Length: 407
Image 1 (cartoon, one colour):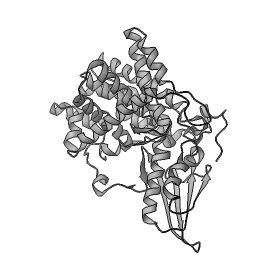
Image 2 (cartoon, one colour):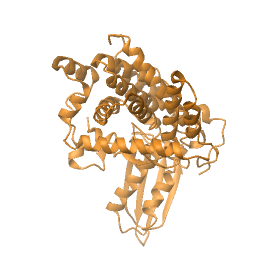
Image 3 (tube, rainbow, N blue to C red):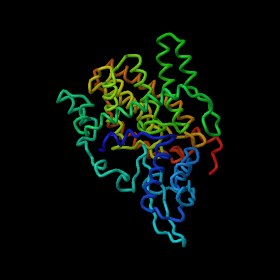
C-alpha cells in the first residue's frame, strides 16, 4: 500500500480521473516522444463518454498542442479490458511514421497505470510502505499497542508526511474560502448557480442546532463548486468527492477550536481508511460507481470526526464502516458529463452523513457485525456488477434524460 501522499493530491478540478490523470499522462508521453510532428490521442470508454464535460480534451491539448498539432479521437463504446478510463497516445514523425504508441489507464484519484504497475511515480513513491493492508489488522495492532490509526501512519511514512498534510490542509481551507466568496454560474450548459455563499449566509441566521448543519452544507458546496469550476483542490479521495472531508474538518476546527496538529492527525487517519479502499477495491467512479468516490469520502470524513471526538480504534472503524456501507450501490451518473449534478449536492449530503456516522458510533462500544473490510469487499463486487451505463458514462441514471455534450 502506497504513501498517503499518493492519495492526497493537490491539483485542479473538475475530475481526478478525467482531468488530472489525462494531463499527467500527456506530460509523460511528451517526455518520451518530444520531437513528434503530430500527436493523436484516442480516448476509450468512460473517458470518451464524459470527457467533454470533465475537460479531458482541454487538459491533454494544453500539454501537447504547444509542441505539435494534436488530434483527439473519441470511442465511448469501446472499453479496454483493464479499466474503463483508457487512453492511447500515438506520436508521428514528419513522414507520417508512428514512432511511439502508449496505452495507459487513469485509475482514479489522479493515478495512472499501464495495466501492471502505477506509472509516473518516483522509485521511492512506487514502494509499498504499509505492511498491513486491512483495517482489521491495523485496528488489532492499535489495540494491542495502545496506539491509534494516525500513529500507525506516522511509523510507516517518511518524515515529510506532516509537511505534505499541512500543505493539503492549507489548500482545503483556501478552497472553502474561495468557494464561499465566489458567486455566479458554474461553467457548462447546465447554467448551475453556485449555492455555497447563500447557504453560508442563511446558516448564520439559524439557531445553533440548525446552523451547524447548514455550515457543513455550505463548506462542502464551496469546495465542490471550486472543483467544478476548475479551481485548486485536494483529491480526498477524488476530485468529484473533494468537498466532504474539508467540510467536516473546517467546521470542526472552527466550532470546536481543534488545533492544526489534531486536524493533521485526523487527515492521516482519514487517509489510511481511503488508502485501504484504494488498495483493496477502487476509488474510481468509472470502475465502481459513486460509492467509490462520495461513499469513500464519507467514510474518511466519519473516521476523521470520530478521532477528533476521542473515538477508540473500534469506534473510528465503526464510523468509517457506516459511512461507506450506507452508500453501497450509488451510481456515477453525471448529467451532461459534468461534475455538477448530482455530484456537488452529494458532497454536501455525505458530509452531513459523516457527522451522523460519528455520532451513532459514539453511542456504542464500537462492536458491530459488519466490518469495514467486509464493506470494502462488497463495494468492489457491487461496482463490478453495475452495468457500465451507471459508471461515469453519462448514459444512465440521472443523466439519462439530459442531452449529453457532443464530442
